[in-house]
Length: 327
Image: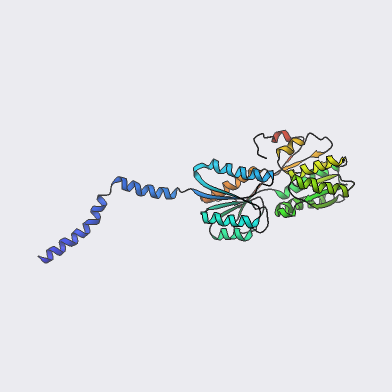
């Protein structure tokens, strides 16, 4: 009798989990599947790091980054931070890591971001660098062709004034690789195609206020200037104002860079000066956001995406006018 009771108890224990499984409702099964599906469809969290808006082009970068994030809709969750210096951007990068960012699109305009970005990479976060080079292995980058902008600027100036004369080059050392590459392309090309051209270098900033102030001083100390190699449209607007206020008629070319609508509209206004811009659209940041999404989706985009240079002047500026542009 005892042996029979032991066997009965053992059979009962075996049947309990089977019966429990048979009693699971379709709703329970769907709930489990839904939870797993929800986990697999979790939104990607993308952080955007941009400089504070001190320049129209920078403002347009932040605008286009947010526009692309909105266009992606339910696919991502985004968090945009702006900063005034490398220290502030470093703190914001730490905040994005705490927030749980899967990817960070960084647009640092200062040196000193290598260590914090390396820390993000070590944490398994995808980093896409926009514009300025961050020399860390594993960083994706989207940029215009800064060196080619310098090459195109040199060719343009020589085409307009010839192989002799005086050119003022306005560099911006604080902008890191942007200025370095544009300067490299310009100087090396001038050495090849117009070695007798005199190039005088001055440091300034990417603002019209600095362009005006610095170039007013440059005009005072240089009685004859044939062309100006400026790397930025905002700087160039200040340069043109300084030329106008000084009543100078010797300058035949002023270059620029960026793609500013206000600058485009100035191109046909002065027949004595060829006003040029090497298009460097702030909308390129949308490509940087797309690279981040592709990586998070398991795709393998190119590590470096370079957007070709387009030259804009009075001959073709109407093709680039855009009333909806924030820049």
